[in-house]
Length: 169
Image (tube, rainbow, N blue to C red; front, side):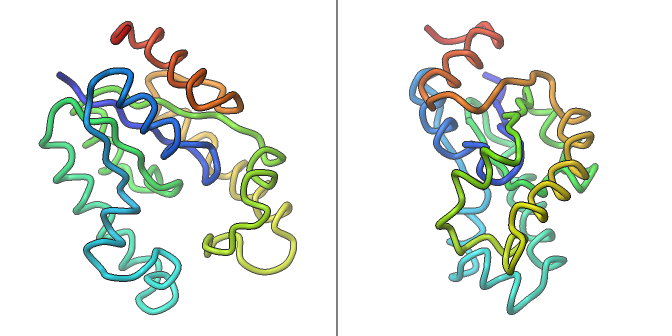
């Protein structure tokens, strides 16, 4: 069974929806950020701080290559995964890529108390989210086989994805 990868901006619901979708489809679930944290023994924020973004992106690509070898997995990838064209090619080769599309207001609402997001650290989170989202949206759209509005409940968004993929019941 091909994999389903959920991409999108931080706070778009990839992990929450991914778990609901995996349950609905009878797939296993993998979160690339959680896998990287587990292997590195530190949080994504700590990796960014201590090792830098390039080191994190290398780890991310390694994890993606490993997960792509599996079948029947819903994969939640980090918001910056699409910055690397090789990651996108790898994910598309092993299944469908679904964009959970959200606006900056939704991101800020969902992440207002989250201090673990290194790319939104500091003042002007809204402005930073807007800028990053507008920069990345074309990459998300180019990577995606399917685009789904990510603003509903996890169950509803998972249902929409399953319907569009025509799998699961």
